[in-house]
Image 1 (tube, rainbow, N blue to C red):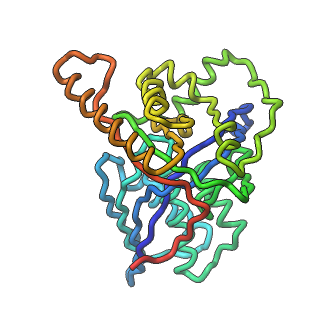
Image 2 (cartoon, rainbow, N blue to C red):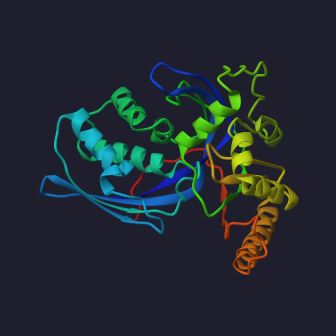
Amino acid sequence: MRLSTPAKVTVNLNILGRRKDGFHDVRGVLVPVSLYDTLEIERTTDKGLSLEVDSPEDLGARENNLVWRAVRAFEAAAGIRVGVAIRLTKRIPTGAGLGGGSGNAAATLVVCNRLWGQPLGAPALHREAAALGSDVPFFLEPGPALIEGRGERLRRLTGFPRLVLLVVKPDFALATGEAYRLLAEARQGRAPTPSSQSLPALTTLSGVLAALHNDFEPVQFAQHPELAEIKARLSAAGAQGALLSGTGSALFGIFATAAARDAAAAELAGAAEIAGAAQQAGVAPARTGRWTVLACESLSGHAYESEA
């Protein structure tokens, strides 16, 4: 089977109290987008797992990859050993808050369960997904959703509008654990004050724009001023709203039309190249180099179906 696994953006994110298990309660809205990695999964006659990763970034040991861990989790939950060869082609930037690895893991769980006769029901599949990562349950059936708990409680949002998006990632990644540490320091041990405002109805573009919020943005901007600059450039290029996605480092802008988005993409890609050249000349110390600029749209849903 050859299939695509989407990314996501976070259009609203509130970090609540720390839980006894060490995780945090969160409340937010995740939306899948049309940026994809590719998985090729083939059953083999020999019992065993092989994983080949094609990525422009160093993803470390294969045993730490979420695809590898998802296969092992499936085997343990189903009580079977599988023979499978997997090739993962990465296009979604890592360390960006776009959920690429989580989508890879969810798709692997879904497809392994399908290939080996559905030994896991929906509750068991959800449980294994949550154990792999807080965003993984969202990707089992990607669609706009309100997330709560540590991310494992999901409510699909009907009528969510189509968003025309531009994703911009600087040339550095951000670690989730470090983001939570910075947020804890900024709060100086104080418990967060829950927002008394409910989310607007997320059925119109204006409603989504009004809901844009991310608790990580102030601390990440203070630590990495380039992120604030990217947000300002997105707004100056015509974005109706812009936000850090998850813990970063990618930001996204929402545009009225694809033409406006594409014009902004050309402008920001040019600015990134100029910035990189200027830095090499030693005259732009505030810059860190090229930005990855990716045009995409929100998805109302996504199915892990085999592609030709």
